[in-house]
Length: 124
Image (cartoon, rainbow, N blue to C red; front, side):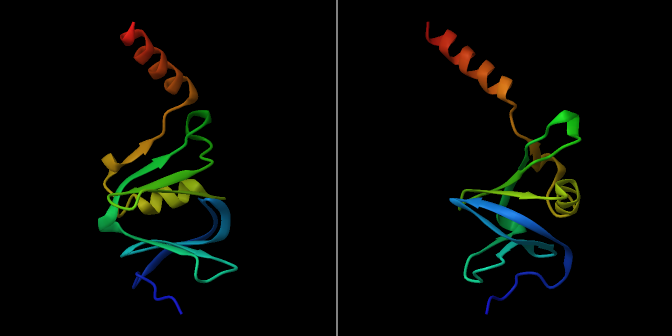
């Protein structure tokens, strides 16, 4: 059986983890860390302590009205992407434990294209 990091749970919701193939399960946010548990296979889980979280990156559309997915970037292990029905509520709860400067928006498609164009023009 898996031992949870958290001693107190603040929020639990259904979610999808995008690590390779999409895994469906539950996200649990508590006082010690961010956890994802697969609903079918209990051996597939992700536990990220708050100390290990570097950034939380949100994909924001329609001026903040819709957040389809968000990612947790760790200091050593890489980036984990998630989606849930109520992403705003998840990010509000995460804001209690992660510094507000570490909650960032991802680049839009146009921003990525602009950066690419600027880098190509610098080379010329």
